[in-house]
Length: 257
Image 1 (cartoon, rainbow, N blue to C red):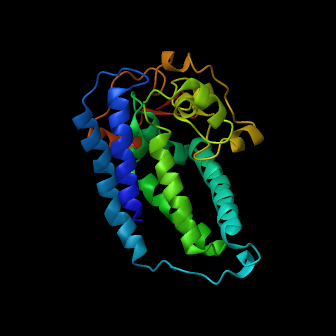
Image 2: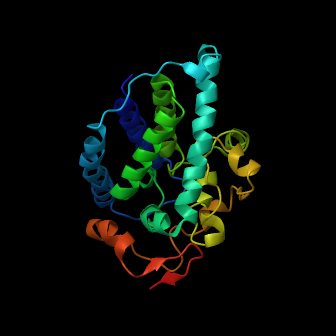
């Protein structure tokens, strides 16, 4: 099934769910948010197409992956890639230049499905290059890589959706998978929170590497979203210019002027 179709289907599904069963009621212009955030994706497309012209292999000899039978190999590849994406996300927070780009995602003062696509075009390009490098370096079977990509993009929607996740279900699901309340903690204003819960798909990497921030499901909605004292959302042009302005937050939450 086409990856773009799956992404759009899930986007519309969770958009409807959070509209009619929101976890937190938010007063905002959905039209403005959707146009801004999809605009960032559209601008990134020519950059990705340019890179793709260099040629991306559609298949590799299974090589060192050949001793994994069928779905066992797919599962192992997905675990391995999710671990690498966990560390990629940490680097976006811990390396100053990368954090300036990644702040565009965290400067959102709301939390909904469109937050899951709110990334600066340069960050999207860097992430694309990182994945291509992983594909080449580890000779990942392309079909397995695509399966993980579908999971990753699907969970970008699922984990940012502002829908009323049944608490008893969430309690058990979150032991293995990233849920929207768990990831919402990562978008709290305070640095002690937004430098935690880096997981994208599987939740146990944060627990394993000491970056898990526990939370009370009933209290999650009481925290504000964004970065520190920021109270207004950015325009489309401001989103594009944000990493290059002087008043950029450091990893500790200070303004780096």
